Amino acid sequence: MNVKIVRAYVNGMKKMVRNEIINLDPQMHIFEDKLHQDVLKAIANGAENPEKLAKEALKTFDIKFSRWYE
Image (cartoon, rainbow, N blue to C red; front, side, top):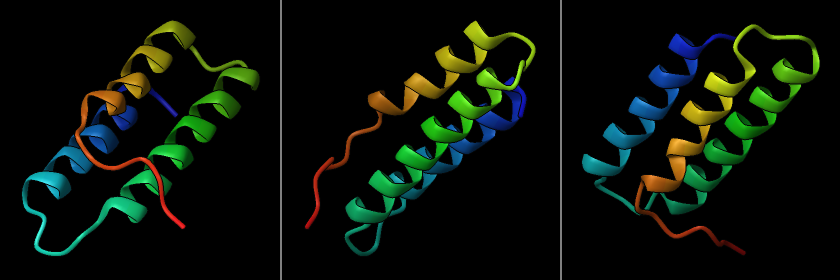
């Protein structure tokens, strides 16, 4: 896990929201949770630049989608 990978993941999420044809909110919420978990695991395992990893991952909160699902 590195900053480049996290940035690509976040950018992919942004593209998915922009190009949404059907309601992807539940999937987007799952993707966001997974990314945050993966970043936390990487940091716990001694990843380089933990502050930068966290900063990039938190950019998902700037993506507009509903963060609840049943």
